[in-house]
Length: 346
Ligand code: NAD
Ligand code: TYD
Image (cartoon, rainbow, N blue to C red; front, side, top):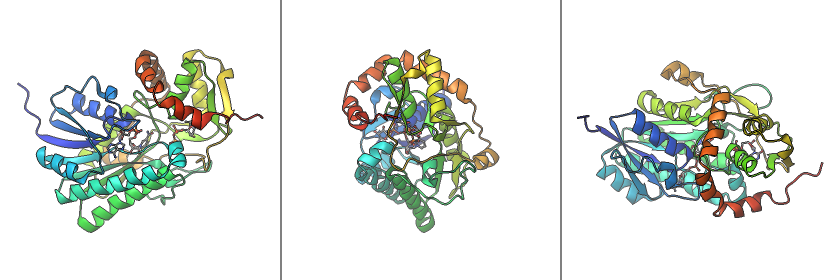
């Protein structure tokens, strides 16, 4: 008989895109770890993202908020939690431009509540899942390093940067064992179709126009979600307390390139591309220098963009029901509010 798991981690936001991929990664690849998964199930949290792992004995799902200090203290105590990995967040830039307050509540106040509980209970490690967007925007040259000054531009990235500062303060002031990871744009299975790649796949599949913001020449540095999940676990296990680790795959593409690739994978015409009014304050380019995690931890991305995007498109084609359930709810109202009347007339 296999040994019983020896340690328990608290994963927050584990019903979202990256969190659910991470929970699945741990349950498949890390046998001695038990996962307590705390998620508030907001619009982007979805138990269907976990359908194949909900009944795994090493996985306990709890519906609740990172802002609920009592609940977190109880969970840490009841499950003898060794460490916390905080994925829970409001995660979409366009929503943050539309309604910033909830980003402060969840990303800043929620992270602080979690840090306070972690400190109180003396957990051994706290990993904050941050983003490269805290560094701001790049011109045509250069990359974000861990010592690049933080200069967030959107309400989303400002809230994530504020959370990072709280993590640093809990390390500096109370000696909490913290690490911050800053990853570039993720793509892969279970991503909510408000984000660019699944939104474009869904629109292409249903014959709708593909709304490209501005000139479409904004650049993102894409990383397949499984590579991000492995990086987070390796950092949890081997990272140096107090460090920031950038995570990225050297996969820079313009949005227009990505959209054209998706159309090619689906055998759909480029005439579906529709240029729309740009996002206010739209960051032009992100690019990650991930040499610290490569050098100190030995992590390398394993899935190149061509393979990852093909796999992602196939996944969405094979999970039409998952997609349909999402887009048939409040999503349509969101879509109409954000996109109607936004077309550019040249
Ligand atoms: P997501 O929106 O898909 O998932 C967020 C999850 O957090 C959802 O399941 C939601 O229900 C949950 N949540 C929200 N508020 C909560 C609260 N108060 N308490 C508990 N749970 C709550 O987001 P994602 O894309 O999976 O991002 C996960 C994390 O990774 C975020 O912290 C994000 O900032 C960071 N990140 C994302 C990317 C990316 O490309 N998606 C890149 C770098 C970093
Ligand atoms: P997104 O997936 O929202 O991630 P982020 O803004 O956090 O990088 O957007 C990725 C890029 O795609 C970004 O430059 C904005 C652009 N974009 C579009 O052109 N059209 C869209 O409908 C969306 C959602 C994004």
